[in-house]
Image 1 (tube, rainbow, N blue to C red):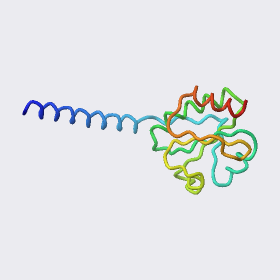
Image 2: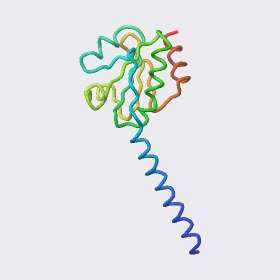
Image 3: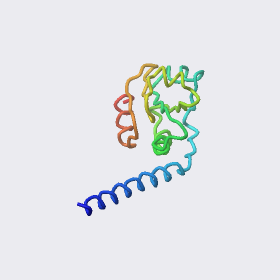
Image 4: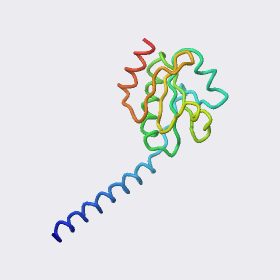
Length: 139
């Protein structure tokens, strides 16, 4: 019986150590420089940018590890295709926009076509998944 408790205790301590290590590593992840083709959106610029064409908007925050993971993917997509405009909204600085679009967790990406929401992604998605959805909407 004591060996079972001892083994379970070691597993719990190991699991907690893994969580702490992962958290520390994620916090130390360097910021990815945003591509010049990605538009930084705020309360004033959001509507004019999303009004026309297909626009993929990434709702993110600088402290969000998964947001840092998706940033290079969005940079690649912005450089590879002209079928979509990519914009980013920092939810810390633009809370009214996050509230308006009911963004409850980040990263959340919303695709707009002529100002109307047509698709929503929550969490980290692969480049292949995002491109598939872009081509489904933009053709």
